[in-house]
Image (tube, rainbow, N blue to C red; front, side, top):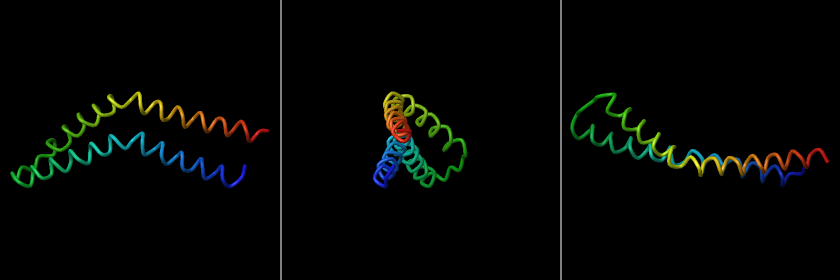
Length: 89
């Protein structure tokens, strides 16, 4: 295995991770920002006000994007297993 294969595997790893978890992280970030602004404007400091909406929305995003995530991870594992097969030759 030469240097280029390691670069390809590293790049595919990073893109797979970003595409897999990115939608859920962005949703949590946006909801957290909106709730934080709401709490600052109304002076309501309730812990469940931040936790419950984030949990519900992130779970919804994960449920909606599950087929895309599985396809992305499946393609990544197919690449990895093909590379493992080439090393043995």
